Length: 229
Ligand SMILES: Nc1nc2c(ncn2[C@@H]2O[C@H](COP(=O)(O)OP(=O)(O)OP(=O)(O)O)[C@@H](O)[C@H]2O)c(=O)[nH]1
Ligand SMILES: Nc1ccn([C@@H]2O[C@H](COP(=O)(O)OP(=O)(O)O)[C@@H](O)[C@H]2O)c(=O)n1
Image (cartoon, rainbow, N blue to C red; front, side, top):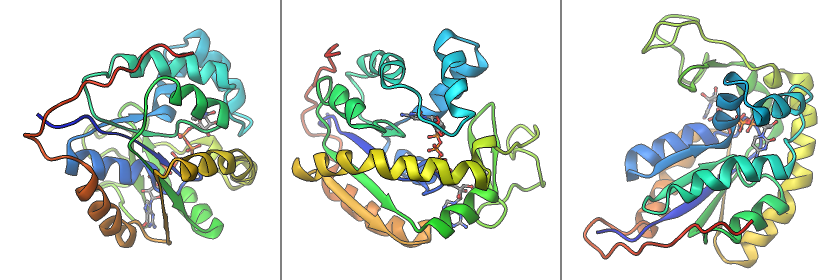
């Protein structure tokens, strides 16, 4: 039985969190949790939190901490018996502190990608809303242009991927990410990866996780994610 492993991947919009999280989940069998997808599910389901979140996302702003925390922490409490990788949360120091009071993390991956690369990637990003599958006309295009490979349904582009929204999101990300990065650096669990191509960054992340994620067969210790907020 393997020891539980909990990690977070951080990075600016378009840095490859979703792409790399998917590879990590497949390679290491972790459950992938995406806060962005979770918010979009709530928006699609017209929940109170979803309706409120939409008003912020449309302006390229972050959803308020108390909304994000209330959305995500009960979800993590259901995961006490699973190893997971969280993408897109925490996004602020308050969210990081709320998470710390609930679960202790083993590792944080921080992606450091240049602005021009982010802008280029997001302008070419197409998404299948129902599944969250992500494509890129330059990096991983769909078999049929504009269509999801699995369902054949139409692909869309997110409004907040447009260059004018990206500038606001990027400035916001830098302001709010710094104290979180400092926090995890002080805890000795931060690992930063820089570059412009996921395929060149991936081998380093893969080898780091191979040394950190206990293999199946060792004792599974249940670490509670208690309601600390
Ligand atoms: N050209 C290129 N595109 C990439 C690379 N890695 C990822 N992408 C694409 O760039 C876009 C952004 O990647 P994501 O994995 O969605 O990035 P993210 O950090 O999850 O983005 P947000 O969800 O907006 O925070 C997607 O269309 C990816 O397919 C790469 O190395 N080169
Ligand atoms: N912790 C979080 C996560 C996402 N969000 C919002 O949800 C949107 C979509 O999240 P995402 O992770 O799919 O996209 P990126 O912002 O990473 O490009 C973000 O642009 C934010 O507006 C948030 O406000 N707080």
